[in-house]
Image (tube, rainbow, N blue to C red; front, side, top):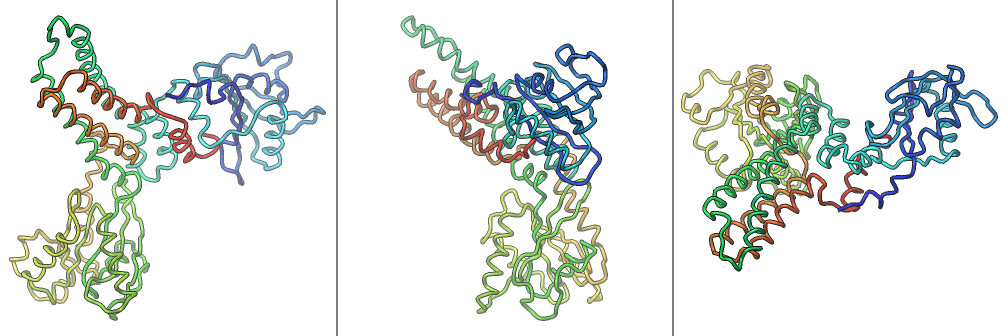
Length: 466
């Protein structure tokens, strides 16, 4: 467990918290035990005889930033936040400056010359975690919130920041702590042959815990897709209209369209936003037997895209395909790539080139389109939304962090070991070891258990100033 005294919390840090560039306002953030003292040295209040040390928390004041020669650098506002009711838990001051590179540079120089140091990436939020203002999963949600580019990614980050996910983890932790307490109590009275818990009841409780953890683990792929963009690969044989379909979806001539087979040799990815969700459409090389080395590499990348996709659109030219052949193609595809947690949409293209549609196709639940004529494309997009179910974000708990996924898998392994221990009638002290392991891995997610390497890795992904 990290000790706050090991992270130099007494130092006062500063950073520009807004992007450098043209704009109206720039904000410099200052946090630490000497934040007020440093501000007092470089800021003169417009209100005469006003002392920063008598200022109330969460108040805004007008004044001038001045250098050691009392030259005015800028007239600005400062916001004062007093510990402990601040973002970091420390005294904080935020300078709202005019957005001039010179003003920003000079103000930072003055802060540094008077005892502050430049903040590292994510150091303000790191301090918030160390001072108990938020747990580690909530701190990670701050980074996700800043980086969110869609309504779905934003909603996911907000839920995690508010603690919905943490509530589930704390419930699991509480149940495991209760199990551990009962087992420790039984060990304390082992000589008196007293049984403090019913093993069948504990097995039932472990089963509920395991189901919750498995549900969280299985939510990762969809949760990560909401955060990073849902990968949808468009695959099929050469010249079935994959690139044309991508161009129609994007309403842009992004992919090269040609009658020459093998035109697409690599994957091409483009994004659109559907119902608040970023969708990453991936055009791929046509699947066929080829002796061309470059085309073979393109086909390998096609299958790699399928493996990484949440949704796979299998595009078929209905004007030159038979139902039996398409069934075989689907079977071969599923033999090559696992479709666990993956959805396949069969799309029959070029309906404008045929007179009628055989009813036999319906057993594969396809969507009939003409990419060339832009027919039924909305039906395809609606099918994608039905699969993604963006409204689930409001109703379910998702995980979107690979780190959390690994920690939960380790927790699940310990739960399984506990269950086997009970079933095999192992001594209580042996089973208790696995209970502690499960608690340890849960603690890795929330930060009850962590180390400097983990923290450095997490907060290095933040921007400076947050």
